[in-house]
Image 1 (cartoon, rainbow, N blue to C red):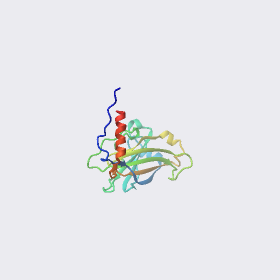
Image 2 (cartoon, rainbow, N blue to C red):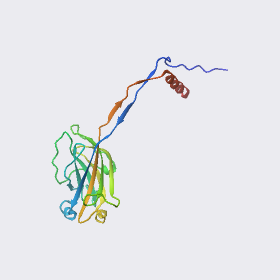
Image 3 (cartoon, rainbow, N blue to C red):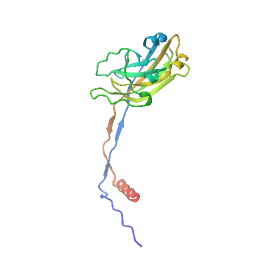
Image 4 (cartoon, one colour):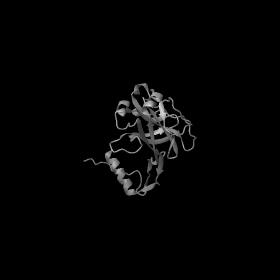
Length: 223
């Protein structure tokens, strides 16, 4: 009978291995809310309701950054005509001056289909944040019936890129809903700013000789 050759450990039992752990984390550092109320909806449709034209909220703060809501009453792109498009824009970071914002036309990424925008320029500050839009009572208060809300995943915001939803709600659905009352509707935006990814390293700790030898035996048997 032929016997199998014995297994030999690559190191002596008195030479322990070392084990270490690194963890990548992303934590929320602050949350802010802002309500954009569209008063005189029928008039605003005539004044700023053309496709590709938006109305904008005043600036609001969330975790040290300044934000604005952009609302396209007839869609951001030609193929979105007949829908209300909503986008969140980073107006300034905590270390940059706020930019002037006016009503007009700006390009926006195809965020509603989870297509990431082009990378920001190296000089631009990037802020990672989660966001949520919800139709609320026209007075800006919470409603008793189910609200219409859409949540966006963590996204990289910068001064040249916005994130949001090109087809938040159709104009037909909005105008036939209880959200539009007295020619007014309101959208509430929630912004949660995330801390940049960080790596936490734990001190290396020795792995006992018994565990090291057992690990070697297991790998040898599997091989």
